[in-house]
Length: 127
Length: 240
Image (cartoon, rainbow over all chains, first blue to last red):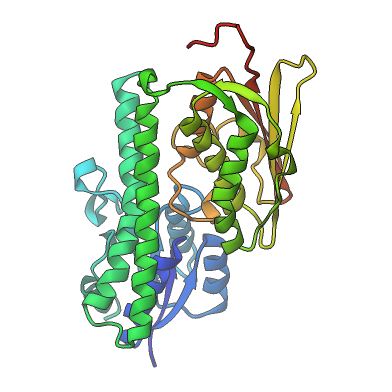
């Protein structure tokens, strides 16, 4: 049985790129362009991992959705990879060690996400 | 921009907004480069999408360059200009984009008339291009764009209205759309690489022409932008 991954991003080019990479690695992929659709999918399907963009309709949609997932005991065990566009140079780089308290996700990855790194990270989280 | 901290904030927003589409271009090309796609037709489609995305980045950079040019008023040489003709030129230029998105853009019957203002053709074209492009981008599927023009009651200004049948802007967001780097939350749904400079650029150019812009909008019904410019008066001092 293949793992089911939910990818949430408001850029369809990013969604399609992730879908190609993940399907190539035999994951089943569901996509959502906003957190409302993501929420519906989450309640309907059995999701094994979420890849989540930070800024969508609102600048903090990704954060809010991650917190919502982690605060719901039905979904709190689902690993989340938070894809961020901010980086070290802006001094706003996120990491699990320092930001895990207010943002309890399993991994922060900086965009653009290398497809091979993404697969290695997912394999690690779904072990 | 009034001070260094505002300038730095703007640069940070700018960097973030540009990084999004650049990352998407890299994502699209990476999957071809790493051999995730074997079908040549599919690769071709992805390359086209990467090119399209990259061209939105160019538009962002153009907006930034235009915005910085506005600081230098010497670049804005003004002349007696038939503004309805300029609007017509912009409509002709934008029509293919509208047709591509299945948006019907009406023929501007009044654009063959003459109404003169004292303005800069390049910058005022930019005003109309930005406004019409917004009306296209944020329109509903199979939507319309209509134009209207008239003189104000005092017969001192020319008024041009551009109305779309788009996603609209909420009342609280109308106040913010002219601020640098702001976009309505509905606008985010039609992701297009907009950097939120478009309407602040429009407002700045109109301010420099002693003109105004007003927005009336209803969510999911449409938006009307009303642009007002002073009419050219022969013999009066129209110099900057």
